[in-house]
Length: 269
Image 1 (cartoon, rainbow, N blue to C red):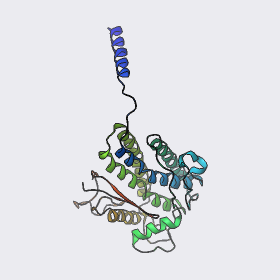
Image 2 (image 1 turned 120 degrees about the vertical axis):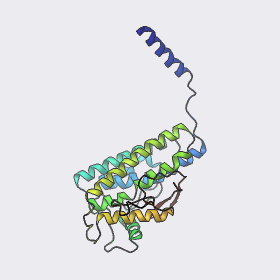
Image 3 (image 1 turned 30 degrees about the horizontal axis):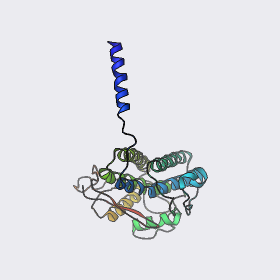
Image 4 (image 1 turned 90 degrees about the vertical axis):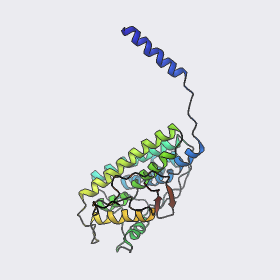
């Protein structure tokens, strides 16, 4: 019986191997949905890498840039050893994302990215509806950098969730599922680290970490123009039917980009 079982399994594996149809072709519609997130993946890779190492793709993995121009304004952040190590791990994950996408579709050269303190300060000013004084500096310390990082992975994971139902090939769906899992994990780590510091003031401003997160989430909701899809660290409207908790974005995402902001529009749930 054992011999029969082993022979049967071997025959089954041989038949499965023999009926392989080769590498799956990815339709053009999937290529578009896989290539566009490269903009955000490049941004994350450079922002995390410069903060952790003081250098970016041009120094660490120049082949991934595909000849694109170097980013503007990146620098090593003033981070504690623990936060620096976490951000370094994020950077390495983003390098892997770039490799995964570029090995699946042709991709394009790294775009010109502005990861300067001034660029992030502009977004924070938009979130608060007024200029902060002094201007917000994401590279100044742990809290500032985590707040700046709070801006980014959520956009990526939401974009992947919106794109996934529109993908046709199993290869593209498998890739996006893997990317989505890592982006979600990064967002969870950032939210956890910020939640531990939620009641702390973001010096020298009179606002707490929780208040910063709420302002940023409100800005994302405003840019999305589809109601409450995002919420800060502390949910003050838990009993409201309009809160974002548990909602899944089921419709295609539509992106708008410029030098200082990357916003996402999604359909209704």
